[in-house]
Image 1: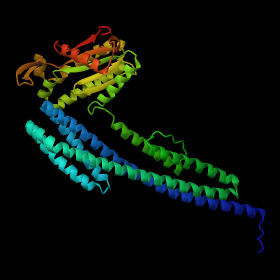
Image 2: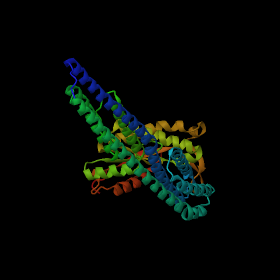
Image 3: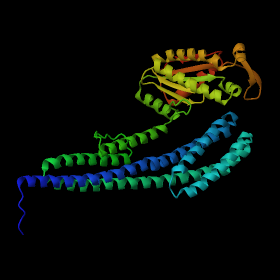
Length: 442
């Protein structure tokens, strides 16, 4: 067979034509693969990860409801019922969101467990509202607790199924990326045989993009949401990289939403405070434990209502955060133990200025919290927790300060015990007061 004789120009033109064909073929395949991957990644974020997160939120809310329910049954304190009602509404809202987006067949047994638990929960709340404590406790032990445990087990099974599905999806993504990489690389090397300079640029770009996206997929699958993606191009690889980065940020934000934060003040809660306190004790550096408590808050809450009390908790939380930030150090922890109790962990030399400013700011705020009549007389009449009529003064603040360098063997328990004693003493004094335990090496 006689070879077709081609001129140099024709050979160059043919070579470039082949390069263009190979490059076009590689680009078309890459675009199709990337488009498919982008669709799958959006589905993964909006449905799979969201469903998994909501189921975990629901489990945590159920456990929080259980703890609150036990506290109410032990204390028999009807003032805590709004908190329980709010928790139940959170559970209902989370369940509806999860059902709305979930596509899992396992929802049927989960729905049955949830319906039974929701019915028992409403019945228990009605008993608590009517102060039928014994019947409520019996319902909790015989029906609510087993139902909650069953629902939690089903939720755990649901999450395991979702985890398995997400893992499988991510493995498929990685497989698609690898297949796209191999084919694109083969096409690029075929182009190199005709025009190396053109093909090298394509290979380097594709290799870099697919390599990073593959590693990013594996890293995100392993829970590393801060994996760095350095693709800055505005093509599909760059878009996919930004989608990955957005997905990782959304996952990280979802994780942060479940940190131990108070829903009213958004300040760190008991777990964070305890860990920080134990960490500072272990470090051995002197620190000050500043415990802030509001006096006569329950009486105010009974007179002006739950919403007014919640507003005060939020206002005081903002005030504590602002003053702690301005008069403390950048390393200070500002936390909300719960209710009307707050904690600041600062240095001993900053503790007293913080306490002074807290009391000054709070006393300036108090008159605005009362109606004209109560503000003029400086008190109001009401019933205490024992049903006895008495006069309740306006709100005041007690601040107890314990410095770790005044304790021979500081511990979270000893610091908490000292603060409790000091707070009991402060509550007997009129008005707002602070007290620093200056006794050395007890």
